[in-house]
Length: 123
Length: 383
Image (tube, rainbow over the protein chains, first blue to last red):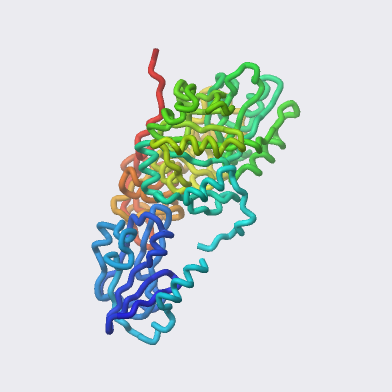
């Protein structure tokens, strides 16, 4: 399994032809207390850059974008009832969606952990 | 997350270094670098203020004096620009008002205090919004009569302490604070430092706002934060607290287009002024008082969990768009999203079902009474 990162602060863990997507610890810190999560239905087709989910803190609403093309396999509906999980375990239990890897070439548009870490340092 | 103003162009309050030391996340606000939250986060800071006490740096707000030859002259000069009664404002009393443009729209909302001492008759103290300082001061200078002058105060900071334990925490250093009634103000010493303390605020809780010498602001803030009951609170929680209290934020819930009747803040208009008029836009405002305004600010409760924020459209259930949300978000004490916005008066009755359109979805909502959380302003026990 390899984990990639986007400039929009999503992580994407690829295991064969399935990818799990969430927001990074940096993103949850910037958002602050998460109070609402809106997730797509399973079966929804997403293109790279499409709005995949919405995450709202007390302060503001933010979009979670699909880092690659694919179809939603499963949404983590536990987040709907417990949005605060996003603050507690953003890169673990608080994943947002699982999707198919529609075009693995797009993974090369993303950063690895070291590159993402360096990118966050510049912000 | 791009900041539109370069950090070096931002002004700093006298408490800036303390905010940074306390781990605040600083953001640009009305030309100032201000703390939006500290390490605890908005939710915890909100609850801290509702249950114990929070310290807010509001030094970015404008402090100024109107100075005239006697109280009546200064009060009448301000009455000519606002719909409130200042002639009969007592010594050491504070009042909320609005500066009106000639169309009856709101230039700014502000607090006005008459000094406690008779020796200072002829002075009124103003606290105005940071974002409106320049506009307000230019307007006042243009409209005040020659014998009443505006003196802007640049060498004082403003610290708010809010919450059920706020006054006790302040009174440990300034015992006279405990004697103030709601919307009363007095000069007093805080650990020997000359301050001016008003029992008022912007959270719906009991508390004070203290005008303090800029050079002593940090010492005062540190003395208060050393008290276990007090924690620092940023602008994020200040916003969620004021929304729950049903209070307006200038530039969002009220602006130059809205009148005080539309804004549902007619409590700033005392009886004599409503009847006599004599303020800018009196024709419109008195007409709205008599016949009801065409639109009015209402509170909104959402049935679901999704927040509706500023700019969301308000619609009749399954019907046309009839209004717009001016403030909204998750309300930590309510435990649900709340909003406020403008609707035509015929749709403003408490309990009216409406829909708020968020990302193309129609979210069911209901017109609700404000405040969303009961006010706990201090009421002096009757002797």
